Image 1 (tube, rainbow, N blue to C red):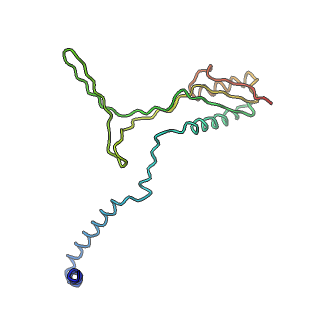
Image 2: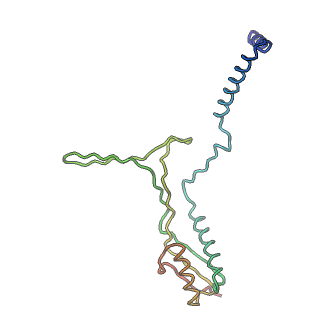
Image 3: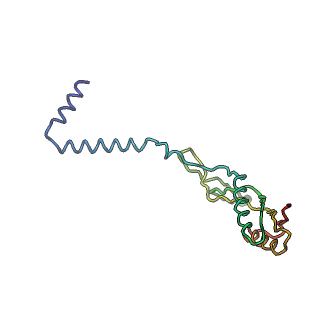
Length: 173
């Protein structure tokens, strides 16, 4: 160990500045390479959403729709309930290989996988949100035909659902 420390001292005592600069740059480069491999806490905290919280999704839609409908003239106090037709749908990338012989047809399909930081996972092309199945609106002005029509038109335009899937009723006093 003493021989190593003597060689280091003699290196720094020598007059060759060109060699010192080259070695210093090399050591800095090695240090930076090692530093890049260290996983810092903030960079490793990628948030992957694998399951959508449907209650929060519907609650947010209910709240936004309730605020919007309440702003329509004549509606008054308003409560809204939205029902979903299905859950979300994830569409992943696939490779499909077809082969055809004289008497048979074969199709092989497999998902495209990539090697990520958290292991192998399929490539997500798109995620479709759940479809709205129906909307119920209960409001103070629900007994007025003109108000009811405005609400039905608003909800139908927002969610692209037919008017028979929208119910508007008067809020009990």
